[in-house]
Image (cartoon, rainbow, N blue to C red; front, side):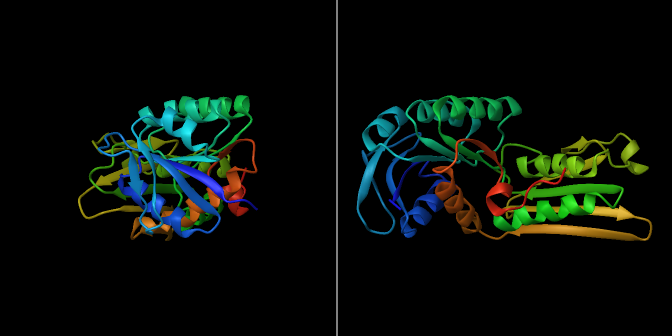
Length: 268
């Protein structure tokens, strides 16, 4: 198998740096170019000491010059959608971990990849443990009538609730086939950062010192069941990113989430 050529958008961001480093350590992938919102050099030094690659604010220029197989983007929705348009029009596959994408954004990504004959992986969370956590929550959703989700993130996270929490709630409802029951307190009106999704209250915490954490608590008479995942460092996302990069080049159209790549089909 030939080495997969990758361009990273947002290469100097917190996730971008981790992704560049992980791709450099993977024998089957090669970072061939990068972009960032503000740059003061036209070359990005790779962290493994293997050299440098073209670096620019102009994604169109980087895609044309570097001819990648895959574009990886963990930036912002306002930057991601134009990037997907540019990549798919050039036959470049995309791996997207951007938070805050709307349903319309994801639908557009699906249309663009289908029209361009390329693949896309769009996932709210690339931590393999988080994907398993969501899968276990789907199983429990069939048997327990009450549920709430608490997600905790660093104070610089822009969206609330998180994409992972919203997707967890929607998948739980799909697996269950009906809304969850509301507790007495849930019927009351009180201010909280979060959202209610068909009986599931989502609570969003934003504090310095946190990274990314989520727990789903199920309740029933005389018992509770808690499924929790904690992100200790951003390196936990890298196996999922590498998996997506390797898989997307052999797929056409949109893959939503890592479930299918891990053999964890969503319960219906």
